[in-house]
Length: 169
Ligand code: S3P
Image (cartoon, rainbow, N blue to C red; front, side, top):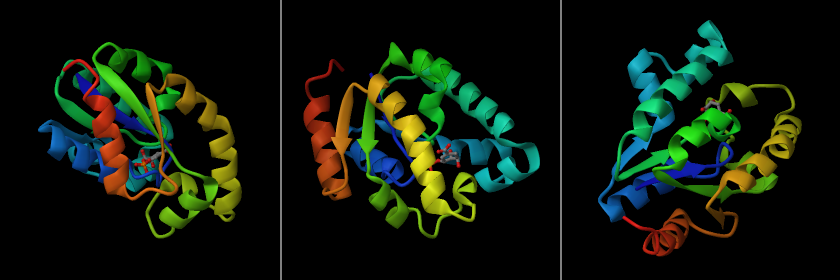
């Protein structure tokens, strides 16, 4: 079994994923970091030089590889779940956990980071639009939804671990 963390930028997927993997004794994979390592380029630079479509292709390729693995906690980029092929590839071997965050939390948590999709004049407007489009998708593919607004990363991890104890190994 794999645990796949999905949700918007700033939801805490990387922080929580690392904690959950440590506690479960599973391997931790951060998809953005893995793509950066393989390409030898930052996500920013991939978007800038090659465009978003190429990045999505890299995401899909990595997903196909991870789908064959077991006992992994995978933190996905915020756009990963939007590709039904990605979700279908992981579904058989994984439980999908949606880390939900409000627009306010997202704006707070993504303040300084280098996120090409939020590198625009009106960040709040961009976040609102993406959230509107993505929230129904995140919700519909998730096996578990954790509302992160009022929780620390440790508390979010605990919630996932409780649920993971009921999932077949
Ligand atoms: C993206 C989210 C980013 C990264 C890329 C695109 C998105 O990952 O994959 O910038 O489409 O939401 P994080 O959610 O880890 O920031």
